[in-house]
Length: 193
Image (tube, rainbow, N blue to C red):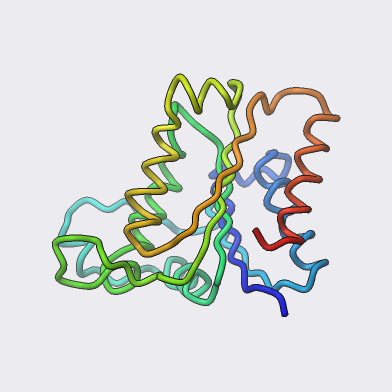
């Protein structure tokens, strides 16, 4: 029996030629071929507002797009998050999405001053980050700080784990290298990892 997988395509540009969109699609193809069920959340197509106060985060109702994304995340056993590294971090629209979707009552208990224990226990995740620099430089020199923030401050606090990562550096490299990465994402999709 296959897994229920929610794929969060975090590239904010709706242009279909973006490599991040192709990676999310390759993962989806592999997952479907192996009998997994998938739901997609395409950040570029959502109405995502920016939070401006703690009160809003704690008590405002999510927009219909955010509520639908929460439903997909709640349904899933495994999350796949694909995004490009912009200015050393995730794009602002993706960060805004997490602020909107992972709010009290969905990802953490309402009224808690700590995020533990989270409400999304029992789910695993894979984070796929694309970047122009070599992935080793990001991991070892920059200490993958934005990736660690997503892992620790959002996903783990919400109860999600284990969390695996795939860092894809030098995305502007050859077509052959990109094809190899697409094949790897299809294989990960087939494995549901």
